[in-house]
Amino acid sequence: MNNFETIIKEKTNNELTDIYIKNSGYQEEFMRLVEIELTNRNIPIDSLLKFREEQGSIDDSKLELGEQGSQFWITAAFIGSIFGGIWAVFAGYSYAYSKHKVKGKEYFVYNESTRKYGRIMLTIGCVIFAIAFYRVLF
Image 1 (cartoon, helix red, strand yellow):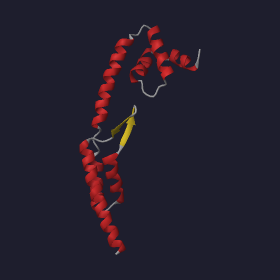
Image 2 (image 1 turned 30 degrees about the vertical axis):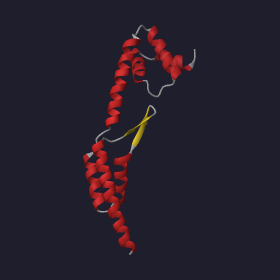
Image 3 (image 1 turned 90 degrees about the vertical axis):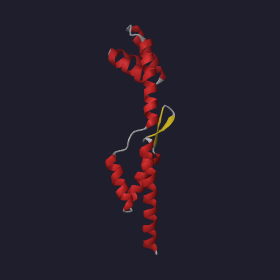
Image 4 (image 1 turned 120 degrees about the vertical axis):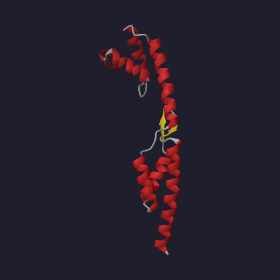
């Protein structure tokens, strides 16, 4: 018995079904052994597979939408961009262009509304910073 088999045998039915449904970050061999163990325990794989596919489509649509940025931090970054804070430029860039990779696909972290605010604060911050920098030099 290899290490994966030992780990799987010690898992409860609920733990195995969670692993099978979530199916992220596990090696293929581990997932194959989980499926075999679920079958040995007479847990219906077909219904779990259907649930996993439905869960995956919900997750994909949620990832495509992105999340709403914190209103407090967006407001603070706007105020900072108006007063020339360089951190507001970084915050604007982060809100506008941050992405993360899930299952080989890249998704924006924030929704379209937050990204729009990020682009605006990035622009304001860069303009104010450039003016301030110009004034210091000349």
